[in-house]
Structures are given as structure tokens and as C-alpha cells.
Image (cartoon, rainbow, N blue to C red; front, side):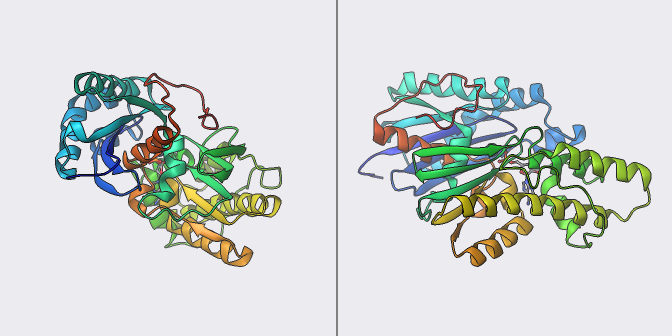
Length: 333
Ligand code: KG4
Ligand code: ZN
């Protein structure tokens, strides 16, 4: 197969999925493979870091091989390898980083370290390049929750992030309290559709700037369940989801009013939520801005978004090293 600008291999191993993907310079995805560890962590109700690292060790090479095979490309077709350098679980990150470094050396291909959150931010442009700039971006994942403004694909200004838990973490913990298994997000959303939001859970910091706080909401759900052990679970789930949506959408509205923008972009695992997708749609219709959502399969962790973000660096001639990165630092190239 010939691709004028070559293709990029992306490798992602920051948390509990081992992923590899091959993407061309236009954002076309030639392959995307995700080896999920959900079964391994489910009995613990959360990601067990040492088990995650061990599972990555076993699956990383087969996952890369499968991604190359499905894309029909050879190592000599690779323009670069992009690998997640953080934030994430350090043992898990090191598996991807060392694998990428070894393959790059063996194949004589440059290896570029990519911030996982930058990958999420670029995920809405995969396949169709649909984002219109300037944009307000809401990133809602298991590890992070923040609002940013993007002047263009490379200029990111952080507007406000969570002071404690991420919204995905709150979803997972509430899922566990309701006995819904791991990860809690999709199950909480499904159960919420069967109930009405009748319980007035708090909306922490809803009127304060563009920062977020979800730990108080999570504790309020725990307290309520302690005091009302027989409460209908669907009512609790619906009331929790309603609080999350109101907080997230109020902050989006505030950001869109403060910075006139062509679009609202919602990315990260929680952007798979049908309630959030619907709420964001309504908000954007009212404010007459475009809503840009990644197709569902690019909302949760994958390596296509990492490979795609790597193209930004290749085009600029920048090559951050494949070393662990522990700070947020998404705003710097
Ligand atoms: O982006 P992601 O795959 O991994 C991180 O970078 O953290 O996000 C994972 C998070 C988990 O907290 C999971 O419960 C949540 O995304 N999630 C959802 C849904 N699907 C995944 N939350 C709400 N509704 C969903 N449908
Ligand atoms: Zn992620």
C-alpha cells in the first residue's frame, strides 16, 4: 500500500487498554486495535495498576503486529511512531514507551512522545476533520475534566479543570455504590434512563467560574444511599446523572458566552454518554454553534487519536521525546 506522506503508528498504554493504530496524514484510520483489560480489573471495581502493567507487557507486541497487519503496512512505511507519554499509570506508560523506543531503534523510525489528553482533544477531528475553530473543548474522561479554548488545532488555552475528582471517576464510584460493576459510566447512564431525577443532589461550584468539583456530589450520593438503603437505584442514578449534566452544560454555556466560538467539542470517555450528547446538542442549537463529537469508538481510549496527534508534531518538525510525562502540560508543543 502506498501513502504519499507515509503513515504513523500510534501506541497507547496509559491505563487499562493496550491500543495500537495506523493513521495517515489526513486522519484516515487504516487500523485501530484495542486489547481491553476490563475482565482483569472488574473483580476489584477499579483499575489495579500492577495487573494493568503486566497485561500490557503480554499484549503490546501482538497488538502492534495486528494493527500493522490490518493496515497492510510494513515498518518501512512508517513516518514515525507516536506513543503516549502521560498522564497515566507509570508502570503502564513505561511498557508502551519502552516498546515504542525498541521498535523505533530496530526499524530506524523516529519515536515521538504524545500527551494522552492532546490525543483526546484531537479525537473529534479523526476521519472527517469536522472541528471548526475557534472552539471550546470539554474534555471528560476517567482521569480528567476540563474546559479549554482552541484557537486552532495546535493552540490550547486551559480555562478551568476539576479541583478534585473527574466526572468519569464520579460515574465509576457511583456505579460501584449501586452495584453496577466496572466501568460504571455506561451502566449508570443506562439505569438513569429508567428513573426520574427526583433527588436534589448538590451541584458543587456550579456558579463559580469554569472550574469543576465532583467529590462532594459523589459523597452526597454515598450519604443518601447510607440513609436510604431501599431507595430505587434508577432514581439515584437519574438524579446523579442529572446533576452531572447540569454542571457540565452550565460551564460549557458560560465558556461559549465568554469566548464566541464556532464550535463546542466534547471528547473523552464520558462523551460517549447519550445524556451528555443530547444535552450538548440542545445547548449548541440554542447558542447556534456547531457541536463536534468524536464517533463513539474514538470517545474512549484508543491509539488512533495518539497517532493523529503525532501528525501535528511531524508537520511542525517537533519531536517530544518518548519519556514519561507526569504533569498536564498539554498547552505546550
Ligand atoms: O477517556 P477514557 O476512556 O479513559 C481515560 O482517559 O480516563 O474514559 C474512561 C471513563 C470512565 O470513567 C468511564 O466510566 C467513562 O469514561 N465512560 C462513560 C461512558 N462510557 C465510558 N461515562 C458515562 N457514560 C458513558 N456511556
Ligand atoms: Zn483517555
